[in-house]
Image 1 (cartoon, rainbow, N blue to C red):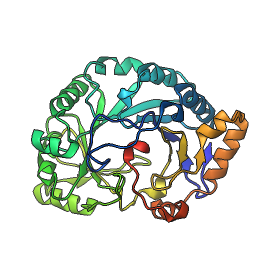
Image 2 (cartoon, rainbow, N blue to C red):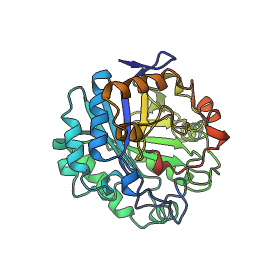
Image 3 (cartoon, rainbow, N blue to C red):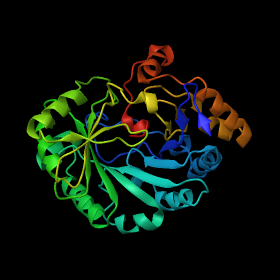
Length: 326
């Protein structure tokens, strides 16, 4: 089993398969996009699979496929199926914007996908366009309906942005009244290409929701949960609040991240602690790579604030979330 120097169990890998995205959400990247890495600088599916096969016997049992938009990468379907067959991997999950999924959702169950986090920040087509800079709203809503019809466990991830989509909070919650969908409100973070942001804290969102749903009550959070979860009586879905910027869940963090370039991150806020791509391509053995992995976990930051302070050359957080894995 993998543990860090603070005694935290590591059993969850977030695997970003591409830095490319077909939306231009302003809280993630500039309108002109980012400088995408050449394909040769990204991990191949074979390299990713080798890494997963290395860490599965060490207790990594949950994989989340992210991007960018993961379904933009050719061959992703076959890759997911291969990962699902690795001994020790108990569940595969996907985070997607839903613009490229409507035709493949019927296959999710057979591919081994247990749940989907759907990024959706507004239920108003015009606000959706202003946030994403693309007119893809209808495709996302069609994907949402198909996911629910297929009985796939679905969460909506909505980044709450001051002056942008506060009017969407209550309509978003109402989606959970008669549908088995969980709504998660996320604090805006500085991973947008500029580092500038004006966070509406999870406490502000929570108090806003409580003022309209005073009967909403706290429910038990799952182990390693990043959200504080609540239930409104007679609602089929739950409501969660993720303090992604105030970083209140670090004490139970059980995850590591692998970026599209193969940079291992032991915290969302660090700038990378080990290039898996480079050591794979240098011909290191599985045993050598595992030893290096254990070494960086033994120096893991206590929380996101410490990780941010330790960034190389004091470089502030400003990279696009698409380069990290949302």
